[in-house]
Amino acid sequence: MPNLMIFIHPNENRKCFRISDKLLKWNIKVFRSLHIYPILTSFAVEDTEWHFILLGQKFKPDTVRTLKLIRNLFPLTHLVYASPALTKKQVFTLYQIGVNSCFVGENRICDFLSFLDQLWQVHWKRIPVELIPQNRDDLPSRAKRILNYIEEHPLNCFNIANLSKHLNISESHFRAEFKCYFKLNFRNFKRELLSHYEDILVAKYRLRPAVLYKSMDYNSVSGFSRSFKNRHGESWRQKTLF
Image 1 (cartoon, helix red, strand yellow):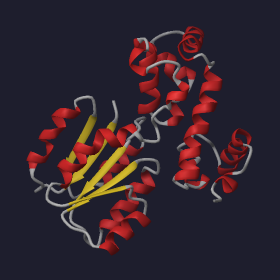
Image 2: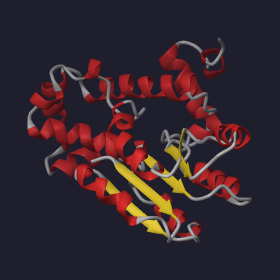
Image 3: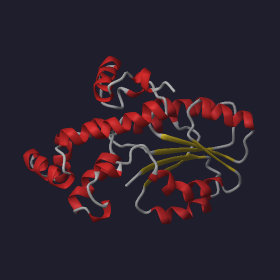
């Protein structure tokens, strides 16, 4: 179940959210509030991967400050901004501060929600098909729960202790089942998946270790950098060179 947080003006038209009936498999939190800082900080400490955050409001002087706050608290989240109208200069500013997608016009919220499933299919947190030995829909129920857990929780939850607890089985039982499902032991699977995530976040999104290391469950920037070089055979700086 992907996770979406929405902040909109209290006067935003409610009919836009009827489409959410088509997103029943999503965990969607909608806040009609102008005071979002305490809400954001409370969610930032939860063990939930917020895949998308939408801020819907007219562009005004404090919009950039609010979006920067969201980006700082949720560095890996797909950040979306929706407004009735935007100038080219405003769009440029939004992408400079880390907004991933913009939706503009009278139907901006509906347009975003209609496009959401497509955005989820290409989200960086999706586990690549190369690591799944058969069609995902054909996997046993417990294997699907493992994949969903990995995608829906922060990377600091991505370990045997949490996953075995989630499935209510012993760690040894989990290790055996995992290898049966995915044809790799958990350690190798995790190494391959983290390498995949880093390829996207560092090479494509060009995020630096200072932004990534905590979200990637490292204690320091240097720890992340060493591990990155061991996995990729080159430093993160080399990886970002064209």
